[in-house]
Image 1 (cartoon, rainbow, N blue to C red):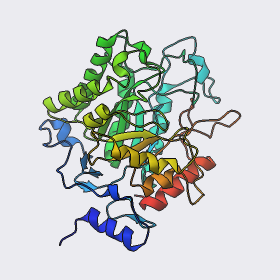
Image 2: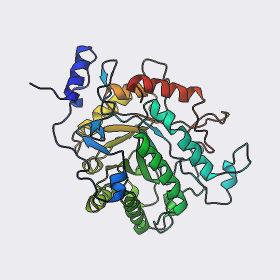
Image 3: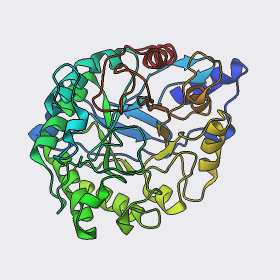
Image 4: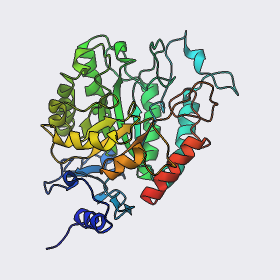
Length: 386
């Protein structure tokens, strides 16, 4: 019998006497992703193409981290990522805009924020980071917030796209394309979805986002309809019972336009996807915030595989604010041990300095804090880096 690459990796894990959960065995079903390439000049020019085969991510026809095994655990096919939702941040509310001023200039500068983000991307890629989790409505610039009076949205009230936001996003996606990196692009955030005037506008926003990606020819972009659909969204179609409608809409619209996109949505920390979302999605998104017991992380992965509607697909944590990277067991390690990708979420805690966090605005995108250094060190050890 001839083993494929993924089976060989699993065999290596067994030989190392560090077994994987039985349900991580990949399917032999064909790719769930985008088939034929677009014929437009933009799509042809795109260097980085993301796709899925069974439980694995592929970039440019090859599994990510090809051949990589870490401590007996297959790394090949995973998508290590970081929550970078403030990459195109701005504040359209003049009453709160001054809150984000840089200490060295005394003012906020959205283009500076994006420029400094792009400057750090090669370093992240060298350490094995492939996925950039971004969002057209960002995330709380304070890490967690009860009220969010600021107005950070690339979507206007009618669902149309703001040119300045999208220009910043284009700069990032162009650089990601050159570096072989992928965006997990969220459209809506529960602190800002109220900026859309009604359900029609929400639908229009999904359509506009899909159309923009297709028109630009980006094949290194996956879609997260909204961040944590089970939090307090104003619009019913963004809540758990109906969000699968938007997943299906984005998939069908992008396919009809010749560039099928991979689409999913996420749930709040520790919670699992509903059946209708799993049936509609190309990959499953989980969050580890609130999961202080690292043993719960592999359990979440195992339970997701048991939900009706699950079929072999990648499982990705794209938000987790638990670290302890120097410890032998932590959320990152435990996710990988169950063959799930993991995403780093860092924000500036009370009393911490500018060097901390990726979500707190203004952001210091440099790797100058112990937490960031710990994440990149462990990720490079796991993945082998660039």
